[in-house]
Structure formats: structure tokens, C-alpha cells
Image: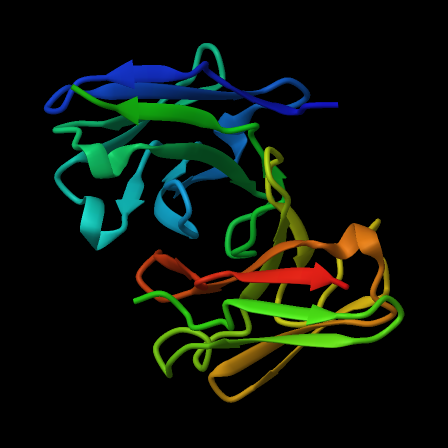
Length: 120
Length: 109
């Protein structure tokens, strides 16, 4: 069964922002590090960033710094990815993934992916 | 920069294949933190190997990981039709960042 559920597909115009959510059904994501990974059409997986669900601190891949913000809602156990100044190259499937314990550095539970399409 | 993997590999059922993942002394070569993921179209990636060589429970023992210097490898033995998928390596790269490999498409002939 699906453990990590992401929000639905989004269609945005260039220059806009998008916010994608990620929530686990069987546990609280705020107790974990949560990573975001994307896959553009015909391309490979690309790591975007990670948020510490416990304290909200985040770290981002250099290529996304200044355009991406990872946040959490402690009341609902939901993690969010917000990507701004969208361009056509941001059209991709966006995944959230859980790191099972700090420092383990792998991703054992993934969301189903959220398709973000950027088009005028 | 992405870790380097062969774009595609193919082999007959029952045979073995090895997928290489070449990084640098800043990522693969510095940490025992390479993981491997199987990715089928329309599905979420699935963890196959972590910590260079460890296999999660539930993953077939036909999958094994190894590493030498800055090159990690995933070996699939006794290839089965169900193994046909894209495979990605991923390494911790320091300063709380990670890098994925370029991906390898495995075809079972």
C-alpha cells in the first residue's frame, strides 16, 4: 500500500511558483529527514534538497539554491516543496523520499510522484 | 556533477550483469554511503542496496553491491524478466548534499 502520499499534478506558467506536499499515512514525516528528487522527461533522477522534519532546517542542491524552499507543517505532519521562477526545464515528476534515520543517507520510502508541467 | 553509469546494459535470462557507478574522491570515494535504486516506469524508485553493500530486507539476494575506490557496482545475478528497469546509484557528497548517477537501462533479452 502507498505509505507516502503526494499532492496531485500541477500545471503552471513560466515565472510562477508551485508548492507540492508530501505526507505519510503510517508515520509522521516530521520525525525524519525528507528528501526531494525530480525526474525530467527522458532524464535521470536529480537530488534537490533535504529537510530535517524535527527542526525544519534544510539544505539544497547548488543548482536550486534561491529557487527552492522546503518547509514542514508540524500540526499535520506534512512536508512541502516550493519551487519558484518556474521555467519549462522544471517540467518533471517530483518525488519526496524518507531517510530512515539521520546519517543513513539512503531513501527507503518514496511518494508516488507529482507531475509539474510548466508551459505557457 | 552526476555520477557516471553506462546508459544501457542487456543480457539473457539467468546471466549476470554488473552496473558501474563512477564518482570522485569527494563523493563515492569518501563515504561508504552509496545506495542503488530500481526504477520502473510509472512507479516510485525502490531501494535495492544501501551503505555500498547492504541489502534491505525483502530485496532478492540476487542483487549485491560492491565498491572499489571511487567506483561502486551493482551486480544482478540470475537475471529475470522482472529485473528489467532503470537503475540509479546515489552517493552522499558531503555538506548534506547527494548526487545521483546518470542511470542505466537494463534489458533482459
